[in-house]
Image (cartoon, rainbow, N blue to C red; front, side, top):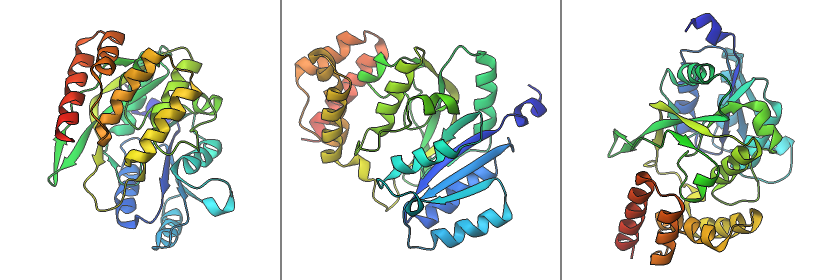
Amino acid sequence: MNSDTINNILVTIYMPTFNRLVLLKRAVSSVLRQSCSNIELIIVDDGSTDGTIEYLRSVQKMDDRVTMFKKDDFGGVKGACASRNIAIKNARGKYITGLDDDDYFLETHIELLVQKWISCAGKIVAIYPDIYQIKGGKLRKRGLKVSRCTYEMLIYGNWIGNQIFTETSHLRAVDGFDEFFPAWQDLECWYRLLKKHNGYAVSLGHRTCVLDAEHSFERISGKYDNVAQSFKMFVDKHKLTNFQSRALSTQLSFYGSERPSLAALACKCLGLPRIFNFRNALVIFYLSLTNN
C-alpha cells in the first residue's frame, strides 16, 4: 500500500496519565516514533504532581502533534475514563485508538492498523492488536486472540483487550467510556460499540503493542472489589439474562475471586461453543484452583 495514502489519514491516539512520569516518557516516545507520521497524540493529565505537566509542555514545544489537557480545567469525575472521553471529544483524527501510559507501541503499530482498516473496506467496526507482555523483564508473546469478535462474544471473554482502532465518530456515537465503572471500562465500551453499530471487530494479526504489568505503580482497575462492583453494574446496565450473567461471572476468576461454579463454567462453554472458549474456561478453572 502506498505510504502517501496511509500518511494522508489522520489518526488520534488518546492517553490518560497520572503521576507515572517515567512510564509516560516511554509511552510518548513510542507514539512519536511511529512509521505513520500523520498522527495527533492527546494526553489528558488527571492532576499529576511529579513533573508530568512540565514534561508535557516541553514535548508540545518540540512536536506540534502533541496536545495536552489538564483534567482540572474540565471538572467532573476523576479517573482514566473521564480523561479518555475528554480526548475523544477533542480528537481531530478520522480514526482513533488509545494507549495507557504504562504500555507502549512498536514502531509499525499505527501503520499496520491503517492498512488493515483500508483492506477491510468498511466491513468492520474496530480492530484490536495482538500484544506482547513484559514478564521477568523480557517480552513474552501472549496467545493470539480470536480473529473476529461480536458484542455477544464479549460476555464469554474480553477477546479484544484494552485498546481498539476505530472511527472517531463510532466512539462518539456511544458517548465514549462509562466514567462510573471502576473497572471493566474497556469491556463495557466495546460491548456498546459493537452492539450500537451492529458489526464486529477483527484482530490485527500482528503483535504491535506491549503491555507492562510488572512496573511498581498500582493498577487500580484490577482490584477485585472494583471488578466485582463493575460486574454487577454490567449485568444491570445491559439487562443480562441469568445464563449470560453466570457466563460473565467466570471472568472474575482472573482477579482472585472465589472459584466459579460448574454451572457458570457450563454456561460459558455452552454459550459460545468454540474451541477457544473451552480453552479459556480451562484457564479460568486452573486459575481458580491456584487462587484458592
